[in-house]
Length: 315
Image (cartoon, rainbow, N blue to C red; front, side, top):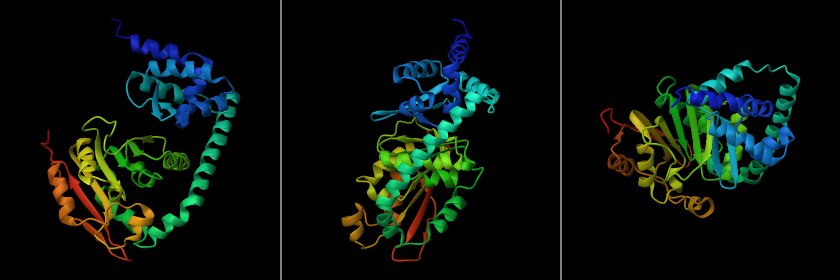
């Protein structure tokens, strides 16, 4: 077998004008097939053929979300190294490249407008819940004390919603991933990642009970205001523990026990908060070591941050 085979395949895949344009675009943003068709002005079958060659060669990564498929520059392997080297060489002032990037901005603006429309429809509902507890900025500051920059490389946010945790913790990560089951939330999160320029952060549609992620893949994992929606919180924590590397850290952010039944009736909360012992028990069951929680009072509801770590010797 020719050891240079994968490299030659990647070189052949990139060495074509349209595929070079596709690589340039996917190096700037994660894009759906329909968005690439819109930018390139070519038919979907033709664009799909180019994408298949780039994915097969390891230059692009593909992610399916229901009927949608998204593409981005690969993040690992020979194809990823070559893709990054080529991306660094593409002249941004080239007339064709500049036009593509101008059309890409139009796609991003359309994403942002869809996100704003969803926010307009749901902002009152979210604001009602947020009015019940301390300012989110206090929560975020407490979270960054538990996961300071330099303490993690790969970061996962389970139930990412709008991607806020990626915005807060993603800049300090080498790579960051947010997963959510809601396509509407992922649309907002992608728009927020574009706006923040966090090209190393990505989002995926996935089930928090069955993460499509290999074991021991992340240094840090967060569950921010997610666990109260879970039918089986222990199952969610088991998956979080599975993908955590030895020495890695998990932080659960949620409410202390309360009696506000309206959150169950109007906002689909399955759990009215959690006690420290309940969280600690679930963590023990998945072989995570619980650390002292942080409580943030201020308002009707108390926010708790429950940090935990996976022992270094864990198998």
